[in-house]
Length: 212
Length: 228
Image 1 (cartoon, each protein chain N blue to C red):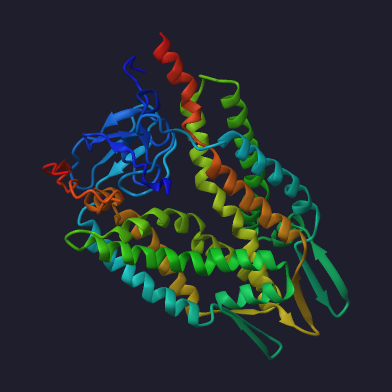
Image 2 (cartoon, chains in turn cyan, purple; image 1 turned 90 degrees about the horizontal axis):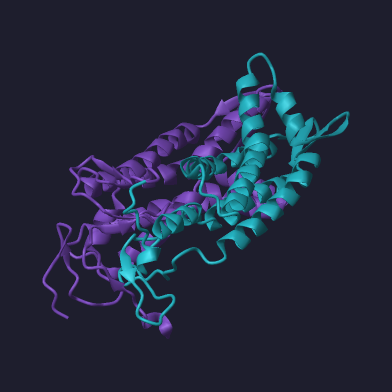
């Protein structure tokens, strides 16, 4: 990195998150407003690390019932049958349906857990003031940000399956409590991504460059 | 009200900080279609679009029409042993509201119906406002909230979910894909097209400022004469 690398914060400038205008707070004022778009300006998202941890812990707690409780209950003439997300994946596995089964496996089970692990790694590395692998860490953050929404797939699958299969008394499908926890995991991890400030990844490096 | 504490903008409008690593840098003048990236973290800072407002307007109008049609006709149906069933997008959320976790029904309603509607409406307002000679203040308000509606508008995710549900149901019954299903697929591409043709920086540069100062008419990326 060139030695001239300077951040806006080091120059006392605030970058607007919304319209990207660069501006200087009035003397003695901590947090002003963007003169162009009226957004409240901060140097870094307030309490970013604590809030991201809070959302992540919530998501990790919900992840357990989301995977253990059934998301769908099927009622047929012979009785009731409940399926968890993983059982749904297995049911979908067939000579023709296996690609979709893999998509649900990735979107519903792997992506939420990978998101939690990735954000925990980013948080810990930021809190320890790491100056290594910045480029990889920011790429990881962007990947998590991009891929997170796809976890919602299973919520939509269950919604429309339940809405359509209403063939009483032959067969009917109803959503089950696991779906609530699963949706909570998706929403909480998305909120965690939004509350994390990616600029924190670079702050330790920026501070070091200036002190040299 | 302490909302009067506006920051003082930097003199050079091309000076920006990377939103992902805060590196100070000067945006180059870009040709339409070209993009600028942060040298430190590789984040795309600005991509200048060609004929951005007109193209975005055309795509948004198309999306608005398709949205209305797609939500008023059945998306998915089935027949089995002489019985029929069909559902719209809203029908799916309503069924969940009556039978399932209601919070999830609200989430489905929000991500599949409300957020996409707001996304399209906000964009329509932004583009129509920005086509005026001097875009008014409310364009900025819409532009400020548009990214949130985009984050939570999940039509493309819903379409993948519908595809999976369709395959699942095909085991028990004959599935009838509704016309809305095809319209929604087109809508997914139009929404992506809006994202690819819209240039928020262009609108921000011409907008009326929140601090009410008349001095900051920016033309061609340069500050006009300061009068205040």
